Length: 507
Image 1 (cartoon, helix red, strand yellow):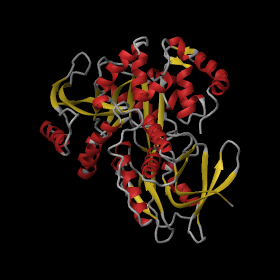
Image 2 (cartoon, rainbow, N blue to C red):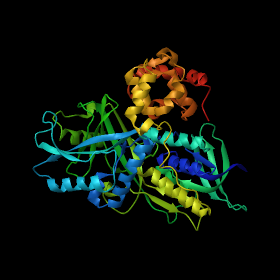
Image 3 (cartoon, helix red, strand yellow):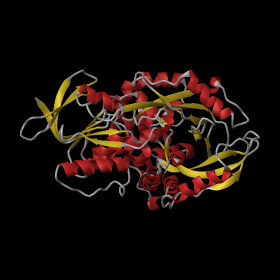
Image 4 (cartoon, helix red, strand yellow):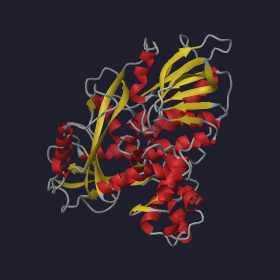
């Protein structure tokens, strides 16, 4: 028995899935998106948190991928200026024993600057290294620019916009199987499982997109559709977080002798983020953990560049994610292409597409191509639109964060600047939803820690698909990094009452 029917069922609540759902809903399709756990719970919240062209991909002659990524970098910066902003990177250069001559690095950066038009991103330049910070062999280098992004919020805002355009977003709902329908409408029968109750039910859909990320191949296998599809290669990337190691807002791009790239990025004011590793992975996709070897590697790379070394005991927190890449036969995981593959299952299996690979920077383009293809398969056409419409909260005056922040400082002069800045960066213009009517911090409800009030938690529960304290503190925000264990335990005990006072979980 079919419980509900949709034009499109999207499987997977990572960045590709929510991007596709948003695009399709905005073009008039009835859309259901299902996610087995929380939005952005896997790969999409385990990135280096960058919107970038991929400077290192020039080394592998992937000029097309780099150019398209640079073009998209500008578009994403324009539609989400609250959660995406320019970030300068220092690229140290070692004179003796360098794998690449100085002129070649400069040429690569020149290409990076000019492969695509840029309006908000500064061009690269040579720079002298801070000898109080760097080891003596690094006396000069380069500065270039890319963009920082709050990766998990990018996912949530796409899902929120999809919902506001009519899509149904169901988290904690697992897709068990996809079966081709044989009724007069040739609809798919998609078997779903409510993860909270264990209940199984079926929905009908004219079209299906498998954007299950690391589970894309597993879902095809469970549905008997894995013949002649691309082979998925799971590559694990891990990051460590240590206490802040240097002043200033610049990040560093380290290029160790093994040919990898490790980013060192100021993170959440108090910390430094270091990553990533690249290792083939065959373990449990629901329990991806950093290894001791990866921690040692990242500490070693950092310490080979900076005077103040770091060690395993300095690591406060770590996270790992698995990239579902198309296996192109390369033995070295770092050389496997990060480009995506949009696989059309016709003529064997109706209007169904599976997505392999991809990255944060190109998610919107990927989504647009998928929806274009779906509409073509359904013999209709609606113009693409997502490159012109702001994500929720990104509709700033003149499109610039500085102008917006000056305005909210006038409107909420009673609010602490540090907290106000976090609200502005996280929620943009949507901060007005939970600040409306408040005249002092007392109006924000119970205070659980510095900068954490019940009004914000209630907003997340009502509007942003939060179903647990972890969702709120580590994916919708990064508040969890800043609170003590005792505060976390207090919040866990208070959580049922917080949900009740918020009016229950939103739909």
